[in-house]
Length: 224
Ligand code: AMP
Image 1 (cartoon, rainbow, N blue to C red):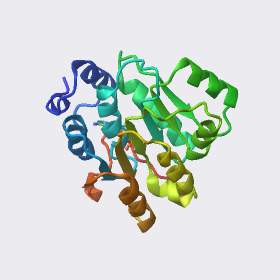
Image 2: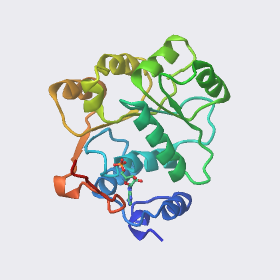
Image 3: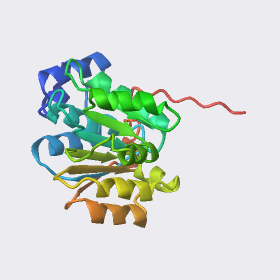
Image 4: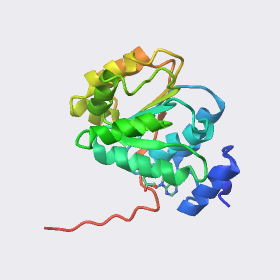
């Protein structure tokens, strides 16, 4: 059994899903972020790159805290690319085990009618790129008034791709009390500005370089 995860206060159901995935010990960012999200309602800035296990660090507490099949979107995850949106969805779905949470990706290029259908049937965790999420908000089909958790994943990439204005417009739509998590490998001024404006006294967690790579990732390179 994943004793390292058990000590973080994770439910049996999620521990089973972790075991199935072959996760035995939490990565450094998971060991820091998971208890903070489970116990304290803190906003968090996680300075961490891909490969640190940052997705599970925010996904596990979301899975633990969300209600099953609520009649509204409970969590919104914004990602810079459709690839990352799909990757995050797959990771959340594999971590949720038997819990009945509907996790759906929303990105440009995918049929809007299909996405409207999903929204009508109900979504608990919406994972999407800022442009498409904003489009669905403008069409009044994606409603954020009951969102309790917001995650900005790879915020610096969203900045590089020119998406931060859309991100701000989306954040302005969320009026109720929310917990916000911001993950970014670097913290340029523009990202700090967003955190100051939209986050509430965030805890800053940084993962050191030598803690970066998960054991489950095999790295190869080819000289060409
Ligand atoms: P991420 O940094 O979220 O993109 O995760 C990188 C990879 O590490 C993904 O394939 C995860 O499934 C995997 N991973 C995340 N956490 C763990 C863990 N605690 N043990 C083993 N593999 C993990």
